[in-house]
Length: 353
Image 1 (spheres, rainbow, N blue to C red):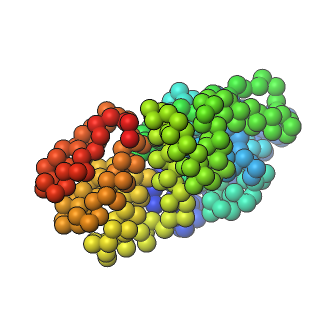
Image 2 (image 1 turned 45 degrees about the vertical axis):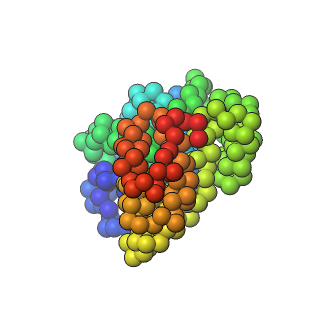
Image 3 (image 1 turned 90 degrees about the horizontal axis):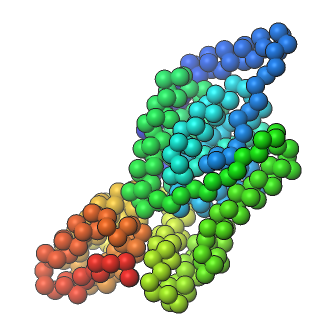
C-alpha cells in the first residue's frame, strides 16, 4: 500500500497491498542520515515528548485508550520511539493535534514495546497512522510519508476526522496532560499514563464514576445500566442521557461486521432487526441523516407494527446529538408529515428523553 494518505474508511482496516517502494526509499535515506550523524560524532536528536494532547500508550493502557474514543476522536501513531527516522512525523502530528486544542488526541504506540498491538493493527510498514472514533479504526497512512503527504495528513485529514467525529456525536474534549521537562524513564512513563487517566476521571461527575469506569473497561452493557440509574435519579442529566445512548450503541456493535450488516439490510428490506442494525452502523460512521432516513423510510413503507421499536431507537440516537442539531429538526419534520396512524411517535423537542 502506498504511504500516501488514504481516504478514511470507517468500515475498518483494509491494509493489504504491495510494498511501497517510495516509502522504503525514504526509510533508507533517513537511516543513511542517521548513520552520517553517528559517524561525525553529532549528537542525535531526542524523541518528541508526550504532553498536551499527546499520550504514549502500551499494551496495558491500550484498551482504556480505545474506550475514550467514544468521547473524542483519536489519531494513532504506530512507530519506533528510539528511531530518529520517525521523529519528524511524530512532532508534526503532535503540533497538528495540539493546535486542535482538545478536539482530538494523539496516541503514540511503540511497536517494539507493544508488538501485539502492531500485530492487531496489521501494519505492514512503519510509521502507521490510524484514526479512531467510537472504537472503530480508520487507516490513514503507512510508511514514511513525504513532506507533501505529511502536510496533507496534518492539514486536511486530521480536521476531517474531527468533523466526522462531531457528526457522530463524538465531540468531547480530550484531557490536557502536563509534559515533563526531564527525559522520562519507564517508571515515569507509567506515572504519566496514570496521571492522564486520572485527569480524565477527574472530569467525570461523581454520580457518573461507576458507569464511566465500566465504559473504560469495555463493559458497555454494564455502563448503560449504571447510566440508566443516574438518569432515574436525575431525569434532567443530559450528559448521562448522552453517555447512556452511546453505551447502548457500542454494546450492540462491539464485534459488528459492517459489510455483513449492510448486505443483510439490502437483502432484507422488510426486516426490522436488519434495518436497526444498519442504522447503528450509519450512526457510528457519522451518517446521521442516513440513519434517521433509513428508519423513517422503513416506518413510512407500512411497518406500523414496528413503530414503537423505531421510536425507541430514534430517541436513543437523538440523545447522542446536540439538542440544536439541524438533523434532529429534519427528522421531526418528516415524522410530522407521516400518516395520522403514526402521530403517537412524535419525538420530544428537547433532551429530556
